[in-house]
Length: 379
Image 1 (cartoon, helix red, strand yellow):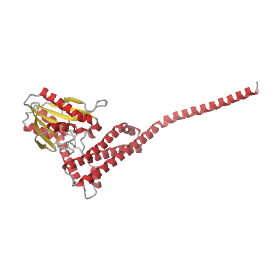
Image 2: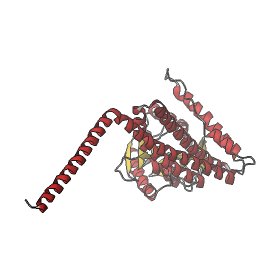
Image 3: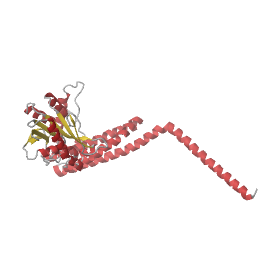
Image 4: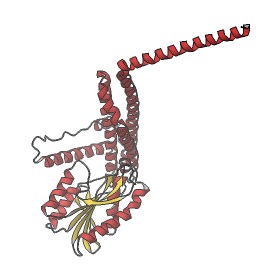
């Protein structure tokens, strides 16, 4: 055997020994990682989820601060307060409502309605105090803007509470639940940021599509205020006597449409052939913005008191209750109105025409209610 052959064999043997050592190290690391995952896998996942959640909390805190600063800036520019409004705004951002006891549900709606009225009056008067130079329209817009600041502050406080509680107790399942809902929470928070800019500028939002449709039916007609922040007008619509109503604009109002519908039905002694409600509604993922659907029932959101009144009054007199909805996402509902939503106005009006023709007779008295926030939408 030559010298070169011996050297080559020795070199190969050395390389083989080195490969074997590397393989042993890799195998050891894999076994160690597997054992580590068995005993500490949940802890590692917990640390990862806490790290992700902390990033979202920092983002929420930034959103809350930015909205608060925008609110303060708008109050100072419009309201021209003599004193710094920051302390009063901080107080409003901690405002809360305690729901009435529901152990005996009978009669809970009037109690809740009363508390909501007191809360709305108190909130509005507080906004008027911190913005003394603002007119009625501006006060309504500022009230909406402060509501957005309150909502973002509440979201931040709740998310931070469960994050710190989960971190303090090292509760894997508490943090897991928080991480599962965080994408939806962040989506709503980002929508509120867009809403704050719309309210600060007094721009129409997606939720105002109902009032926008009805406002076109009111053009040139005499209007009167029938209930709190709700106006009504009479017009001819496809040969019917239409009583149309919407929240008073162009300030940010939703009004009390339940009270308005109840009063109209009472004034007409129940002789109403049909009630048509037009409102924005949340779309499913995959559906197009501005799509229109027709259905039965009271198309109105909120806590439910106004819906209760409408359902109770229409059922009392056996009045058919129809709904026309314009589909949009939660972000589109509270941010400046998109072109697709505005383009749906004429299509929705045509849908109302068809509905009225098919379900009432000429000469009948009908109610058409545009439900939603009237910010940026005039009379």
